[in-house]
Length: 358
Image 1 (tube, rainbow, N blue to C red):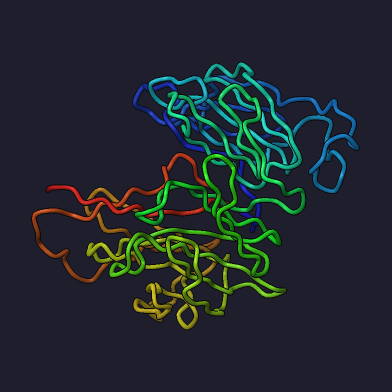
Image 2: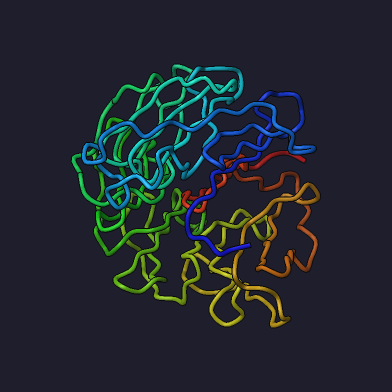
């Protein structure tokens, strides 16, 4: 094992719909679909050859190719063909170009304009049943054509979420774009809110302050130091900021007690980590029991709609759960979260409220 701060070009997903997950992964300059049961190769192709002149590829990391073929930076499952379920595969480099393939690994299209950002976001924004892809500052249609671009050509977008954050506003993108700041962007490409408050790095949305209308948007930023946390209301207005010890700038929303109030996972450190509420106070600390603190993740298991915390390092993996039963009621809090098959070290996290009957 090794410590990485980049994405891994790997997703686990039942791409052929047979009820068994495949592993979609790239290594040795090939893109593979592997059988999840035994890692046997179902399909594979070579990654694209880098044919464009290096000086013509804007956004290319370090301004040159590392290899003659693409060394894939990230993989995302999308649905640009409008099939019954997502079964198209997007791959990208760092940070100039992206390619989209069907589930037989036939190339559908390629796109490049300035920069890809870290991890593009897909959604059907125009209601035609086919995904558009928001990549850095560009909204790309399902056929690879450009719909619009933001009037920005420096830095790149680190994380993206999309939704209705304020009850009296339309759905919009919420993004953090390094030194270009935190922005709310309408579906037509209009920048509605922009706050350049340092190097915007991570973003999440949740019901962090249930007494307030709509959702809250949390971001992290830094001026030479990680760990500055900003809380905004659903209209993008700053509510407060805190400076905390950071380990990966985590601000993932957590459905901890099932009450409808989301908490923020910071990290697993006993003194500096824990779960923070929407007022900026740590309300669920981690016990001093020798657990690993290198990495942390929010997980949902089949036995409980409330979420658990997974922590691990090179040597061990621990799972933390609640110490009491969920409160009884006619409905349970089951918020809409990011799909598990599009995992990334660079994805914005969201928790859109949803209650369902038992």
